[in-house]
Image (tube, rainbow, N blue to C red):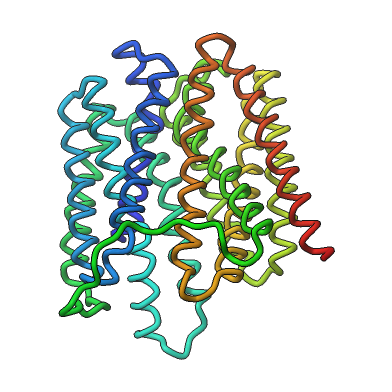
Length: 382
């Protein structure tokens, strides 16, 4: 519950961005700057605090992380200016960076202790639903509340502030799974390295992570504005549905393909994301909302499978003693993919139409997907 609530809160602002734009006159570029602040918070937190719960215990990291999300909610509720919006998103990102790896590890340990003889499939399904599924649910709930309840820029944050408070209480009552070490190791930031056996395979996995998170970033930052502007459907509920249409199928695809062979998962992910990008771009050029949504769903399925394949490849190729380091590098590059393309689109929209900007992104991502396919094919043939 806590994991899903925090991840859902991270996308509460997504369907509200067009409302902020209408109220304060923000450009699309400034919306991507606000979103980039969130990514900076996540990456910084992953590097500095993502591994600390191994020493001090899971709950001592989870509760402060949820507290930071509450602080962000309070800032959003204060009728914030542009600087406060940026600070609120930065704080929210720091909390999510602290929480993501810690909550995943905590869920794994709780499941293992409660069902020591069970397979890990249930844990994978729950953690995926809480993480990727939570991101989609947050935007959907926020959009529906903004559409049908008074106070569209306040009510979603009030609802999630209450859920975050409940989550803090729930985590406080949950069992701790890590005993605090009497002598802690000397602190150091999480190390990042690409030297994990098969360098080409690692680069392919990192590129796959970048490509999958690139579309995730676009759909949680500027896509709602595209729907309201280029497609002429200025509905917060629809904006939330657009975000959910990507993350919901991504979570479902990851859950339903647990038994699929890694090579088949990678091939399916590459194909689906490439096809979805083409359909999405054609839908924007034809100003067709159904085509845009179909493209978003297909992209979500592809990106979800592609990222799962990337994580599986890195985890299998890395030495056990360096697995955390290898995965940290993958997440760092992936979160760069979450922000850089979105900011790039924001910059492009100052000079060209949103449709042209999205088409440019599609071309770049398709090129990256082609490179991933080439590198993976070479590895398989060796």
